[in-house]
Length: 195
Image (tube, rainbow, N blue to C red; front, side, top):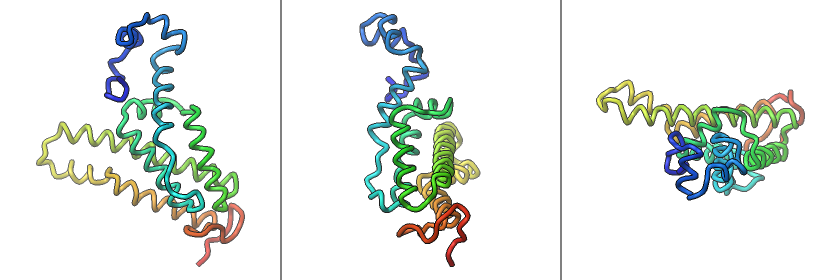
């Protein structure tokens, strides 16, 4: 039901009916619909978040991890609903954060810089996904001849996400003194970027 996009109409009672069980049997496992959505989204996220890029190629790995989350949030409205509703601290979300912190740390960022970089990439990704999903819904209802709507929609494509993320990763490289391709040029949070 969640994958099919029916999470908004779903209730514990309707889900119990689909499963052929009593609603109380579901309440033994989840507190409410939001708790159920958190669990389902965590299961779905665990299937898609891991990048194929090598961890020692921090920039490619981070970009792929961010794009996988963006794609997941846009394709799964329930997941976007969960991520916009509250901080997600599920097992899969924690594993994703820990992996990103490890990759950023191995690239040479201090713990504090890695946390800030993770926060920036994560926030950019969720915000972009929310805007992309919203614009996609609007585009289905708007007059196709509206030139301004088409121009605005062009700012919320996967290509635009990748370009904006590239700027963000370049900024992380420069502010932390990290070579975008090979690793650390200097140490510390206040390192000057190399020429």
